Amino acid sequence: MKILFVCLGNICRSPTAEAVTRTLAAREAPELALELDSAGTAAYHAGSPPDARTVAAAARRGYELSRLRARVVRPEDFDLFDLILAMDQENLAALRRRAPVSAQARVRLFLEFAPELERREVPDPYYGGPNGFEEVLDLAEAAARGLLAYLRRSARAA
Image 1 (cartoon, rainbow, N blue to C red):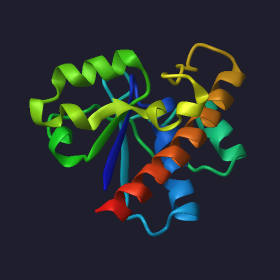
Image 2: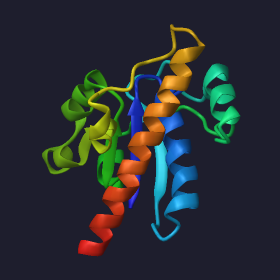
Image 3: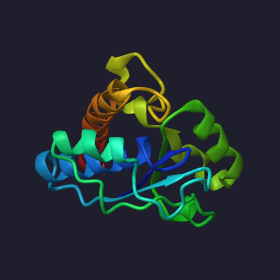
Image 4: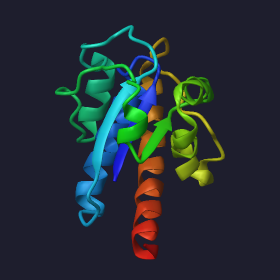
């Protein structure tokens, strides 16, 4: 199962979602064979590491992001990935405009996997204070656990 996490610039939310899901999958669902990546819908930060505030907040919880580098969603991503998970409605709309008809159903919101949160979007912490990065981690942990549960159920049904 190949999963791509997507936000705007790929330096805050989507690399956090990637790292959190990777860590939780290794710890809580090692039976799942996952390939994870993240990307942005805009090229503002292509080639850059994640935001230093994102890296620091994640490191405090044991998540490693420092080796990740921002990239832009490529046309071939719609063929390569089984799920493409947007962090918010704006990026979901951008992905759906770019996605071929055959990939539309695989483009979803990340927080769909955490319905108990009663939220649909992971807010962008870039222009806010340090609490925003903690909130992104909280949301990513909940959605990653929901995603892993969904993938386990899907694997059993297959």
